[in-house]
Image (spheres, rainbow, N blue to C red):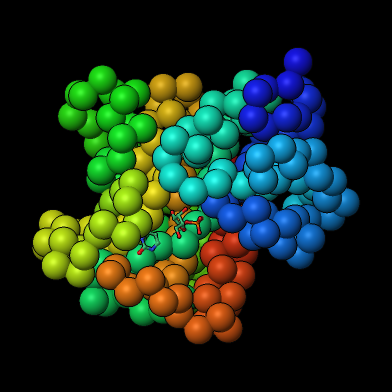
Length: 235
Ligand SMILES: O=P(O)(O)O[C@H]1O[C@H](CO)[C@@H](O)[C@H]1O
Ligand SMILES: O=c1cc[nH]c(=O)[nH]1
């Protein structure tokens, strides 16, 4: 029987899955990087594709925006057989050192979101990626020479509530950037005993919803996906 939201069957989803928020990014990744990609899910805009990267089965599944949607998708993918969940997202820069299109490899995610809090029933916790996947992402970004930053990110619920002052406060504690899904994916990785990781591309500055120029963002996303696919093969 198919799950309620990701309407796929057992066997449709590969063990290794890339997780963009945006369905069009999922489609672009599948068409650009995967051989023989087949779409297995469309319901609610949660587009999912499976193909092969360098001969290895890989799926790309859109999560939608925000931790509640990402948690639903992750739980259902795991029931469908996924074992490695790697988010390929965009983020708002909090740290001045981040430039448009730079890559950010999450070493941990401050859980400002409600979904992680509900899973934890209020317990304090530090959501971390799988260490092998994290190391593989870092090594691949270094090997390719792409500008990248490694450290803490924050996962938030309310895109338009975060201010430059608020972001600067978090930057003082080492937060590089804000996004909306990683913390709950890291927590679910630990709870369900699968590997979870996150790599991001800087799409804007916190408090400035204007995106960086499309060619800069596009190149950053291309680099991010190259790094992510190579890292997937290492775990
Ligand atoms: O580009 P994606 O992967 O969707 O990631 C970021 O973009 C969305 C907000 O614009 C949120 O989902 C946030 O996490
Ligand atoms: O949460 C997010 C994600 C991208 N950009 C932002 O400004 N905030």
